[in-house]
Image (cartoon, rainbow, N blue to C red; front, top):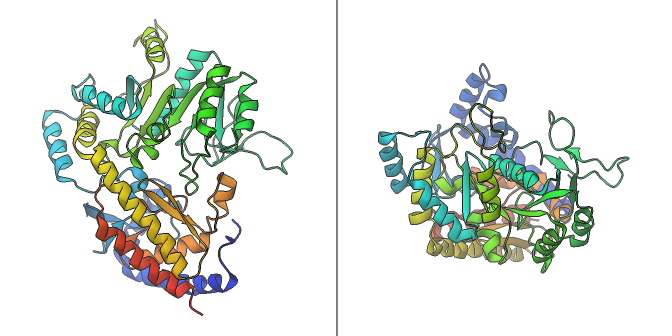
Length: 461
């Protein structure tokens, strides 16, 4: 990535100095984590259980001993106030006493029953209240929720195509891990975002977020089964929809016979009801997962009555004599996931709690802008409910291309290690600090105090 325009050469020189010092300090603080990683290399690539645990960080991998509330503690005894919130998987916080009680009680009854448990009914009702869709199904992740939603869309429409928006992230499914080809490319075929994906899916199109005209041109070809879209882009900072974009997309989908699938995996925690409720939308399907079970794996997707009738009509059997839509998994909708989701959604992630963390998010965004202004930096803060982040310019981004210009690796990595050495675990590079349900005003102020000290040093003459 190129250097962000909001940083001067003097800033970058200061960041280089800070980074060198802070990296050394970080390594000195985590010898036990480093030793575990080295031991792990004998059994795991990179010494970690899954690649992103090493690939997402330019510091040595932390090994975590335990967490409580808004903080976790590594194996060296260092505690961190968590503003990454597990990329929305730990947004409830760590070791919530009510959730711990539910896990123990359900374990005593059986964590996996392979048949429905009553908690599913309450979870469906809570999701209906948030997103308005009447029928729901469950998986183990948002990735698989998106996979199944697209399969239903293809059966419902008889089409293969999918329209995505640049800067999106819809999980680790082969159908969506593609980016638009650059303008200097000899081909318009999508570019893979990782290796091992095979050929691009048929009729896959990717256009810029907020470009309704480009989306209309794709939909007018009537090859798209579904538009899969986040109401707010959250994997390249935060990009809000322009007025009219989402309603216009809804209308275009209806006119061209394409299903609108809203991915609320992240935004459902920013505000109650996510982007669907915030922008008063009526999608055909909604997908999500992450932290709705308090960190216990779960995915979910909702649909209209008409789509639910289609799914009911196309149930397969275990002998393959009746071929149905390719849906389901052995551990999907397991009793533990459903019991935890019931308590989280009915008791812990209430409308009042969403309003509270929305106020914390506003306090965080206001504080970032105030701190930048104090240091004569013409920056803005991203903001959508509890979500915040850094925009190193005076205008907020309208699409992923503009957002990526602010994802300056030197600034992000230096800020993260500076914060970590002072007990704050900041968000991963593609995201931004997020207020969680375990945070309070003192946590927000602690984050802003460290930011003030960081910018003091970055901006020192």
